[in-house]
Image (cartoon, rainbow, N blue to C red; front, side):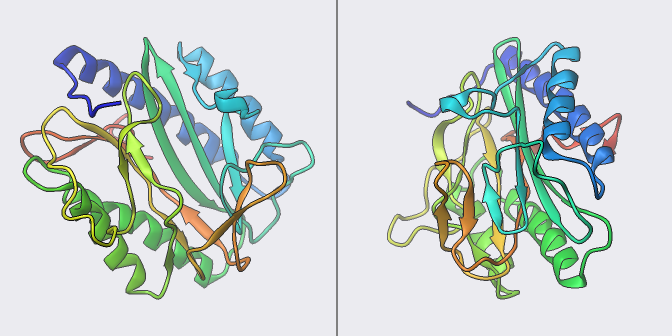
Length: 258
């Protein structure tokens, strides 16, 4: 699949898809507290997405059984929602989800603190989010793809964190996963990466750990955890490359950051 440049009408549909996704993230975020199950979060996400005339794009994608990925503590990505997985005080949980609106995908992730968390966990979540913003400074026409990657890696590693290498961001549009892959580290020996052009749309998503960058996939073939059991945070937005500053399509609800 080649990298696609979106036309004006496609960008407007992606903007609308992402705006609706921001609403869902905001509402799900308000529900997160000790005692709630990830099944309840998933059920609400499905309901909200459909109320907003969207389709949950994670649901049944390559067989994934949920509308959201609910990834707790050492789970990096692809945590499966369950009635038996209940949040407790001191957890951190990554909520990754997307929707399709009139044929166009959006994708975003947020990591939330559950109840009273440690300062170490709060900083991990905060710095993972900031690593996205360090990377997105380079999501501009004329920059290269790995400028984004290098900025994320430099910032995260300055705190001694691990930067997951086996899971990456991606292009997005009429498909959830399009070219190019967007690593959160600068791949050795692969030059500067793709030259960024206006109309490209990328899902940029740092996955940062408190320990090793190495990961393992559990027996369910979805749940992906840190190899050393350290906690992980995940932050993602759908981003439009423009002639000027990047437009973070999935960031705002009613003018307020989500």
